[in-house]
Image (spheres, rainbow, N blue to C red):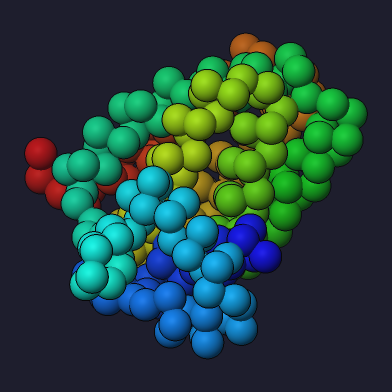
Length: 208
């Protein structure tokens, strides 16, 4: 139930249905998602560690603001972790994980053709989760989990004005396929190409 609560609230924040600076409460979220307050509380604690909410004692829960300059700092770290996990996943993924990565790649191709933002967002989350699992590096995994929601929310806030969603989906598909095929060098190159695109996208949203 905690995982269900986390996924539900995280998606609402990432897709901006819960807006930056909006005040939340456990009671409101519990009623909205028909989930008990204990799982909601545990999900909010996880979201606070990831920087998507701030828990203010005796005041409530605040959805964190979005800062483009901070996002560039996030990407500095994410680029290195993404490359590491892509290469490690190519070397260490199980047969089942490789099959799932191929399915994600096919889904990304469909999202690219349909320009489907919600499908893309959900596939992106699954790709991130699977890449972390396939990499079998707990230290990189812990760090990467702190960055993913912030990156997806920033993308969703600005993609309509500054992004090429079909291209981004294809870059994700290429990364997933390279990992699935067990080619560490190709996976690292695909990761760098994706991060190049994401960084350029981010810089288009702010003067630095």
